[in-house]
Amino acid sequence: MLFSELPRKPSCVVDATRFGLSADLPTCQGFVTNDVPEDLRAFVPQIDSNYVFSENAYRTVAAWLEHGADCPLFVSGPAGSGKTSLAMQVAARLSLPVFDFTARLRMDVRELIGRWVMESDGMTFRDGPAVRAWRSGGIFLVNEFSAAPPEAWVSANSLLERLPIFIPETGELVEPHPMTRIIATDNTRGLSNDQDAGYLGRSLQDRSVMDRTWNLRLEGLSWEEEKRLLLATVPVNFPRIPDAVARRAAELWLEIAADAEKASGETELGFESAMPKIGHRVLQRLLTLTFVQLSGGFPPVRDEASAVRAVETIARIAFAETLDDIARGAFLQLAVQRWGSRMLDLTKEVG
Image (cartoon, rainbow, N blue to C red):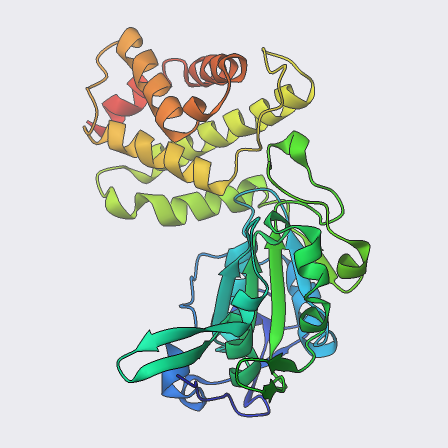
C-alpha cells in the first residue's frame, strides 16, 4: 500500500500560541487538516491540550524544523519526562503524520525499509516506517534509540542523514519528501548508557551517529507545572473529590517525590541504592489510587492504623513494589511520614 503525500510546501504558519506559549516566540510551518490527504490523517496524532511545552523545548524544536531537516532531533530524558509525547504533540499541532518504530537489541535495519508479505494475490512488498515517512513527508519517530546496538545505527547513517533510500527488493530509489523529519527518543544521552539510573540493556552509541543529531534534553516538569497537569487529568473520573482535596493530595505526592529524589541523592533514609526518578506516570498512578481510596474503592479509612495501611497500599501498587527491599522500605516509610493523619482528614472531607 502506497500512501499519499503531503503538499511539497507547508500551507500555514503556526504560531507559538498553538503550543500554549507566547505569540512573541518563533513560528513553525505546518498544515491545516483539509490539506492533509485523507489516508494520512489517521497517522496525525490528536492534540492533547494538557501537554505542557517549555519555552526552551519549543524554541529548539522550532529551530530544528526550520534549519535541521537533514539531522535527527535526539530527545533524551528520564522515564516520564514527556519525550515521545513531545514528538507526538508537535506533529499534532502541525498536522504531520507520524510513523513510529521502537528499537531493540536484535533490530534489523531492513525493518525500517520494508518487507515482503503474503497477500491474497501473492507476495507484496510493504513499506517500513522510514520509507512511509520518506514518501509522505511525515515524521519518522524512533523510540528507545539506544536499545539497539551501535552497529545497527552506524549501518543506517545514510538514513539518519535523510538521504534517498534504496529498496533492493524492488529496485526503487525513494527520495525524501521536503517535509520529512526524524526524531529519536531515549532515556540515555547516546554517548552515556546511564545504567546507574536503572536503564539496563542500553548501548553506548557510536560518535559518528551522535555527531549527526540536534539534541534536546527533557528533565520533566517543574513542581507547579506537574501539579497543574495532574489536577487537569486525574480528577476527570472522580467527580466526588472536592478541588481542595484533590489539590492537597497532589501536593503531598509531589512533596514525597521531591524528598525521595533528594534522599536518594544523599543516600539518606535507607536509599543506599539509587532510586529511579519519580516521573509523571508514577505520580499520576499515585494520585489516581488516592482518589480511588477516597471514593471508596479500597477498604475504608476509619482510624490512624487503616490510614497507614491505605497509604502503603497506594504506594506499593503505584511504584514501591518495583524497588529493591531497602529502597522500597524507605519509600514506604517516607510516604507514611509525609501523609501522617492526612488520609484520615481528607476521607472525612470527602464524606
